[in-house]
Image (cartoon, rainbow over all chains, first blue to last red; front, side):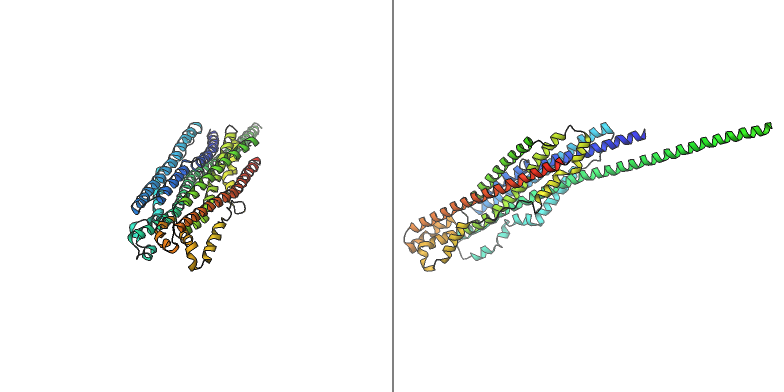
Length: 254
Length: 214
């Protein structure tokens, strides 16, 4: 009975391993490559803001486009992460139900909402701390004052100054939009890898559970063997006892 | 495991994607060329940005190709016995093929982008003596600054050259330069398209070989 149950669970684990692999594959297909909604959103974002920024007529317009771009990028990140979380949550839920029904196998729950929140937080911290933040933050008004170009042209009229500043800002913006997007793409892929890592971790945990069960079977088999041997010994003792009794009886008769 | 026809179909699909991606790169670079930006900046930008864009696109195309191949493989083994599926799981094909394709010996590396015609013009302009600025100097100034500064140059150049002829010449020169750059971009993309195609094809072949061994 116990053996049967263990065998069923081992079969269940094999199915879990296979199905989880196909879920991870589906995740790659859905979230990477040209046809993924994330890649399309990044491309649309890039062409939209390249055009808006290059065509900006004054600093006010340029600053507005930057603020909008920042908001839109946050939205793309948030939406992408939540789609990825939703995908894993749903797929694992369905798989868990089916495994439980067919093999009485339960899979540990992974809280993707917490994962999503912590990834968002990490991305935000990254934006603020490293190159991602610096790329955008040069547009903050106080930073403009630091531009060397501003001092170089200080003797010129205000309108010439603004034109030169606009040229400089546009130049930086053009190169940095693409850098920022590359970094965002890398970060989202890292998040995806992290999610996949959690699924793989869950598989490993399950694998060690199965290993323990296998060990239990081996122990049970060993116990069974011991019992059999003891039973055999008992039978032999019993036979010996009977033989001795018969011998004693014969002695008494004599 | 995958039929020859299926692999050919995948190759056709990825070639369409490649064409599409290169058209996007071309239109993006041409968009900047058409804009009123500092020409020195533009020249350096195109030279570094175009290969970088190609390299990034190559990675996206690789993911797309692996998606096509893995989808086809999943389709084939969907109804197969669990032992067949387990073989595929253990083989970890996607990761291995991707690592192979991005390995420094096999990876796609865009060729160096040279804007030859531009180098020649700028070199010639450097040789122009300050006293001879009247004839070509306007062009030199205009190449250094952006198009929109041209209007600012009108009074100064008019005194020097005494006519709007110089401005016209400068404009034409800049436009000609930009047309040459666009041709350079076209040629560059054509060369790299061939390289990208053979790289993607080698990935398909490697994939086919790997799954045949399963």
